Length: 401
Image (cartoon, rainbow, N blue to C red; front, side, top):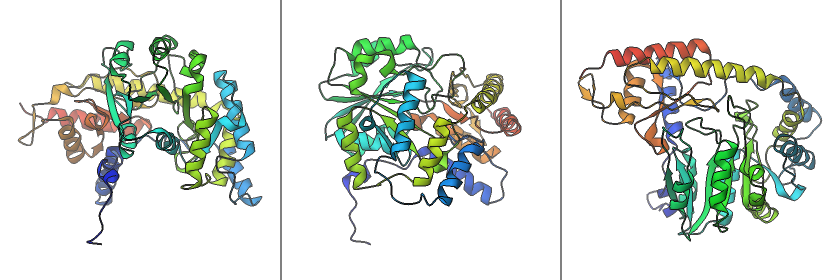
């Protein structure tokens, strides 16, 4: 083991900060602390019964063998029907794929297209894996800034300034993690006008929170700008909308040559997604979606509880997100204050101090490329949220100047 030399690629990335903070929470809980974890992006609802029953039926029917690498014909037909029904987008069988989780879709797309020196434009704040995955391939993550005043939405001039001849991809995530920002039809149309001037730039549209939107209708760039569809990959999955995080079933759609290249990569890595999860995902896509109305109502109520409570705590400033199940409050008012004699110099200091003092796990904004902020997930029950916010308030009350 002492002679093992690790690759340059693995040295370019760090473990996921969200996973790291969640692990710290688990360790405190194992030590007997009453920890409330607002650090993980996972619905607290159970997988819908009809979806679980479809998986059980698949097991009993013996559907437990290898499938086609990018999904069964039945699942791929359900995926194509979803995009037609929900987004008005038509895809052929060879333009859709299922994978073991949505993250692998991103990994496969970047692995299939990026070379050392290529660039991927990523608006900040960003989901932690967006820059890490291209960095594995020796590509460069170009961070395009957004502002809280603009609702964390990438503006056309910022996109234009970030594009170079080496740009290969633009990543768009709406509704967004960590901010809950939702790109409107007009927002996407303005970005499309820039992208038309740069035909070498492809678009990765991560739409996995599509069904968790509140006041701004969902839009996806391939539908807003159909002329860009042939250089757009839509990343989606069952995890967020259907509370199926552990089932590890992602799906997406894009140009056939790209899907073919991604399938080649899967053939030498993951092979097919779990056959039972595929049956469950098919049931989720084809079944009754009325339960989503109740879930959205719960998320909206929780969002309002968290936003209002945070804005009542001195030192925090929290915008109202339009989708997903996160808030991204500024904690700038806490920087420079002292906790147990130690100066809080960064949002990481704030997050770690809140976890240590009050057993509430959050994720610092540094993990998402914009500080000083915290990300809190409100995908948990009202009582836990109320208690967590009370503890955060107590933490701030105990700070000194």
